[in-house]
Image 1 (cartoon, one colour):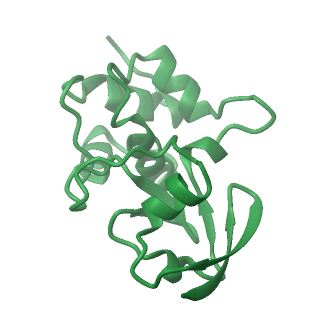
Image 2: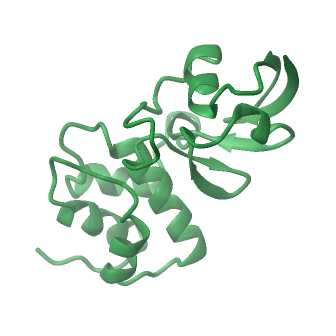
Length: 156
C-alpha cells in the first residue's frame, strides 16, 4: 500500500491505496464521485476525462499514486455553489448531449481547450475533442456548445 494525498474538487484526501489502483477507480469506488463514468477502460473513449494539475487526462490510464500531491477536478467539481459554468450552460442550451454518457469527458476536455485557447475555431474544437467519443450526437451540437461557451456567435 502507498499513502497518497490528493485534492479532489476542492477537498483534500489522504488514503492508503494499492500502487496499481487506477485514478478512475479511486474517484468512483473510494471517494464515491460517480459523475465520472467508466467507459472503455482502455483510454479510447474519453468518458473518464478529468483535470489533473491543469491538464485533462483520461483517468482510466492514470494511477491514483500519480495524482499524489496533485489536484483533480472532476465534472462534479465544475459547478460552484450550485451554479453551472458557462460551458455547462452552453451544453444544455445548445443540446450538446443526448444520453449524457460522454458528457463529463466532453466537458472536461472542452474546459481544457478553452483554458488554452479562449476563442477556438470549430476545427480546433473538433481536434481538441477527437479523443472523446460520442455515439449519440453526431458532435455538431457539442461543437456549437463549446463555441457558444467561448462567447462566439453560433448559427443554426
